[in-house]
Image 1 (cartoon, each protein chain N blue to C red):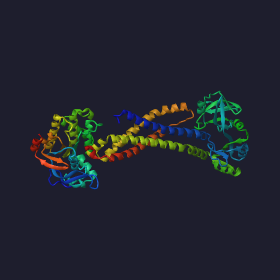
Image 2: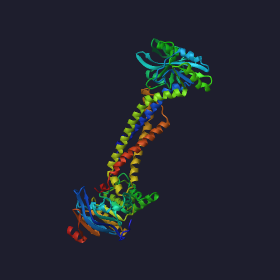
Image 3: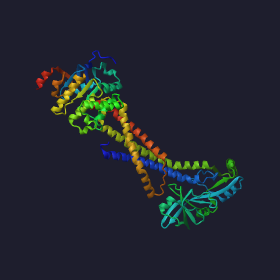
Length: 360
Length: 242
């Protein structure tokens, strides 16, 4: 291999690209997972109340009335009831039009607000809007800009973080503004309920179910799990498919290069067999070479990965990634596993090299 | 394993034939060969290409099994050895010199030697020390860190012989060791092989068509069409060929 630098560079480059792909997929997954779930996680409440049959807010629809909120407030033990309205809405600026997951919340309590404000402030008034940072970057919205939503002109007052769901981003307005968009002032999506005494959560949950049949009531952890499951069911199959393709490509590259090396060094292997090389030594050579190549690929991938991610995020701001040491370790271990598997495939060729070949 | 009946006997072939192919429709490479080789002798298998010399060498080394007859290596039938035992036997008691040397090009001279020592079960610092001593013995220690591609033909052959000697094996198998060498270098190599037999009591078997080797061999077996045509007297053959 060292004698053929071009082939070595291409091999290591190919492996590095596969590793970058795997790392990137995992990072996008973590980014999407966080962006999709963080809103729910950060709005920690005791109970989430939705329309019957709704299990999540990512891919479920729930329509409740403000009357439901009043009935909830009448139940003893409940401290606060905060409405939230989610709807898909189109934002216009000039000739540009793009869709956001518009979130209307009660700004007086602040429950349902963005998990994090990167720049500016939360909305305080009906004519204000907070945009997700990747959405704002993609469409070049800045604090103070005017955006048009249906007939209304709203001013961007804040840029939020952890609100990017990859395919769509959150935008935040007052509940009244969101309701005016939908055209029915009495509608909300769900209620976030806080109780006076945490020990009564289960009992109050049962009481809501009894008194308001047709509603779904979840405690915070259960609702979070529902949404995580929903997010995973939509994203993980794609992730697994692409990761599997990456794994197959990696296995193919490694197996091919190891097999080619064995074939090219066929005479050397025949000589070593004739000289009495133990089988484990020959097998070890292949495994060692596989690990060396794959480790070199991983090192190159790690050098490339962060600049590549920065470039992608700059070119496509909606791509939100999150990388951790655990992810990197996991990918490196997976690559070593693939290297061992590829070596096992290649080792079979050594068995078919005969000592007599050293005498031909 | 049994002890050989004659302690100096290294390898014995009893009516050995080797047919390559299946169902009796193959090619007979070696035909009804009977011979016995002992320690301390340099034996030459002489014959043209395709006469069966190399196949006979590989039969002697236990690399292939005979189709008929018996090959006794160190007193035991090679068929009685397991694959692992044969591998260990080659690693510890046999040395090989190949045509065109067949050094491992990706390893240095020293590594080519240490490789064999490792196959023989040696480990640690003693391996490098033993390899360096061997290279010194063959007067090639200055090439220790060079790669085979940087060596001349003669130097490569000396390294190949050193490698064959590294494990201290009693049987040295050499396939056309002088094929690619000019006269002066060939003579050097022949003398080296002769000294292995005489001074170190090795059994050296050389397959070659090089008549220059004849006068140095203790015995010469002339081969034709897979059979030993005759065990010729060295002087007689030298005269005939000269």
